[in-house]
Length: 204
Ligand code: IMP
Image (cartoon, rainbow, N blue to C red; front, side, top):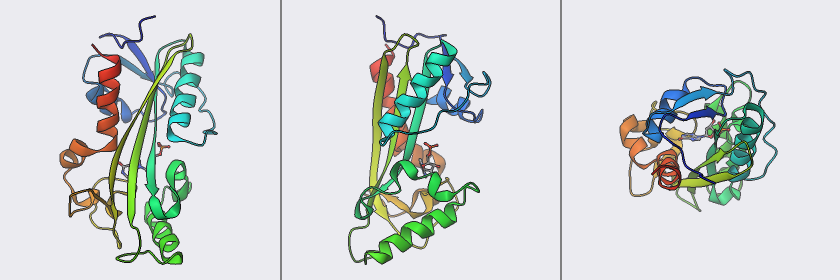
């Protein structure tokens, strides 16, 4: 069985967001025919697993079974050490249906305050995870994970990036992802690291 991504191959991205296609194409770094689950009208599965890896595999397998094509899925989020890894796989859900990340970041700050670790006191360490899974219609699935460690800072700083970027300072730095130029963030991000592992595993 040849578990490789061959140039020109058709890959279904298990997303309903067409904006992710150019990003995936660039991160894979080769020419593929990338379709989205949305274009194929595939239903989105419930993310019922308890880990990033589990949810990425679930989404990739679901898309591969329904489309009959090799499928790629990701699952990502931010985990806070002092909050036992929360919000973790619930990162998007903490922002609610309105995708209000100012509220989600406030919630992180409040939870840390509740346990006495909002700023200089206590453990403010956190990490971002990106899990990527590629599933074949006949069953095999390859999954990798990339992480970037850092520290949280409040109030949020910078208006670039998305999600939790304005409260996250990557290890060794002094600015948040929200204050960085996109290229600077991408050079060290969890997503870039996960795609590098995926390329190493699946592209000759
Ligand atoms: P997913 O789309 O279910 O994987 O949810 C990912 C969520 O994790 C996003 O909505 C963001 O809240 C958060 N997240 C993942 N990657 C990043 C990042 O690079 N910066 C900021 N937030 C992120």
